[in-house]
Length: 253
Length: 276
Image (cartoon, rainbow over all chains, first blue to last red; front, side, top):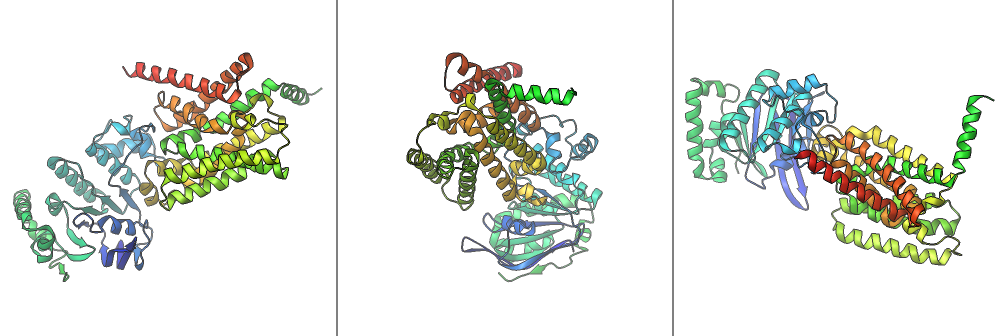
């Protein structure tokens, strides 16, 4: 276990944003927290990172765990001249060779001297991922990483995440309100609407009535797309995906 | 006679010249306002500089009433003001309203208070517009002491300050406390206000923070370069404004800020041309 919460309850301005959330991230797995807007996803992430103090319950981290964080947005004030390379050296200085290697890894080679403000949304996501990787994290935490990307951009970003996990062995925890590509890219999905509605493998979750109640039946198309893609990309995908969480869990809403 | 005593003697004689003192005061203030002013721009804190500077007038009144050195009185009130505003803003008070009331309230109260305590041997203009030509040796010691303190503080916290300026969440995830970094900037601002009061005056300290940094922005590719250039441009503006003040007998603070605004226009023009 890298990171876990136990009975986490967070109230913000008198409203209970999270109630009794217990979850864990194991080494090397890709977990996605899925939920509609305003369901407490970002608050859960912030509590996991220690930015929000829970009212009840606690967060435990494996000793010496390094977390690489990729925020949802990065608004650079136009008055701040900041190159990609200089950004990678925040807050810990890295050598130009390390910076180049990290940029190469995320497919952004040769952009080190470009101003950060001139990058597209997708490029900025990759650069933020490169910065997070420079800290050699055991866990990558990404908040809505594909917001504002088109579908091919999303798919490419999730592919990159999967590659990074494969190479570095880092676990990945993502937050998303987007059911489409997330399903294909995760080992485990946690469906959140202030409490955990259901969790398990993407297939189990997408079949759960709690999930359907949250996201409606309109997502069947996306699910079909997911299964279709997987059947094509690798043959034994289901066995492969199910071996560490055979059944998933259902929590009554 | 050994060389050190000779040099010390020369330096002391130089400091007897009011022009040399004025130049050194301007350069000293600019060293600190360059990097600090850059943060003021990056974090959009210009309003904050104004409020702190206005409160300094109240500090002057306090110092005059209690026979404290003026820089200490202004420092005390500037710190209280800066921390109050930062705290209220963090608690979600409407920043515009709070600052409007506190900033102008403190300025007005300060002006009223000075008229009470003061047998008027210094005119109010000194504090409102600065009087760089009347900088004394002890003023110079406060200015350089404050400038070195602020520069040291910023250099020590540079990476953490820059990270939390880029994104507070990012900083926090890396173990940096953004609130602490903001407090450091707040205190540095109070120190700069206290020492710059004599040079540019309460009404224009914020201009000295913003304008040289804005001029440097047009010419810079990195944050460190911008901070250093802002110091250089600020120092040049001080010397140019000093010259203008001496030549045409104009008020010192406004002359310096006029020169800085001129440099800004040149830098903006140059930056545009280079980009085309």
